[in-house]
Amino acid sequence: MNDDSTGPVITSYAQAPAKTLNVKGTSIAYRELGPRGGIPVVFFVHLAATLDNWDPRIIDPIAANRHVITFDQQGVGASGGKVRPTIEQAAEDAYDFLTTLGYSEVDVFSFSMGGMIAQDLVVKHPQLVRKLVLTGTGPRGGKDMDKVDRVTYYDILRATLTRSDPKEFLFFNRDAVGKSAGKAFVKRLQERTVDRDKNMSLRGFQTQLSAIKKYGRSAPSDLSIVTQPTLIANGDHDRMVPSVLSEDLHRRIKGSELIIYPNSGHGGIFQYHDEFAPVAVDFLGSGSTSQDEVQA
Image (cartoon, rainbow, N blue to C red; front, side, top):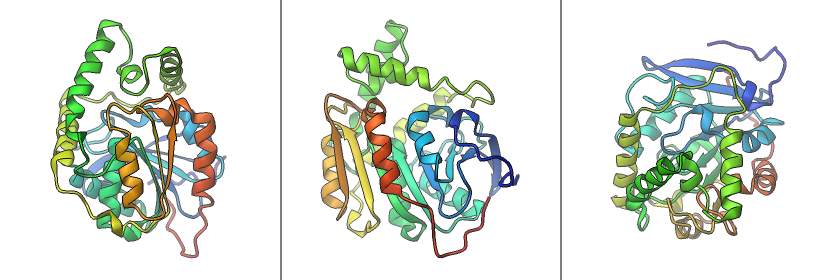
């Protein structure tokens, strides 16, 4: 694995180098930025998303003072292998990736499906996660979560008919404020112009969507074992993962913090990035640890 820790510190996600790591025989694509040292902040991305789907207005402020890692799950983007049919398997892949990198402790920032994977990771490997950020997501077995495919396909159709990016419909309200926020978000995702990731395949997207439905229809996890400091955030009108599920997470994770942004949908943290990014930076704090970490 390449070690560029002696070079200049990159704090812009648009400039983060593209890397690969062999994890149990499968090549996993990832990016790193921010100052090295201590506990990294690892980002778990949403349904049908690749490395290029992270909002730089969220990542860059965190990377100003923290080591940030983003990665593609198996079968996604430039990663090898096949998309896993269950959230549990995706969580185990994430565990393998992080431990292969050499980390025994990380902070996790997750959005949507990434938050489901993050929950399964924490439940099975609680010692790995120090702090947890859950945005636009819900618990295993959450009410109406298994209806995500109807909403997704409906909004993809609406986007196709208007020649828009589906995320404008899926993540944002369709009032004037939401439409403006959606277009601005999609534009920000294009700021990286070199070494862009490969697009998600249709088969991979369908497999992930099926995995979310299984997650929504399965027995709830015991989230009382989640003792890590946890920040939960969402918009007040999330059509993909109903906003009430963020409140459900807050009730079930003792001591968690909850932020619900007004007049916003699934992508509330992106619409309110100016307000949310500083909160996330403050919550995550420093990456200092008393344990020696093996640096990538």
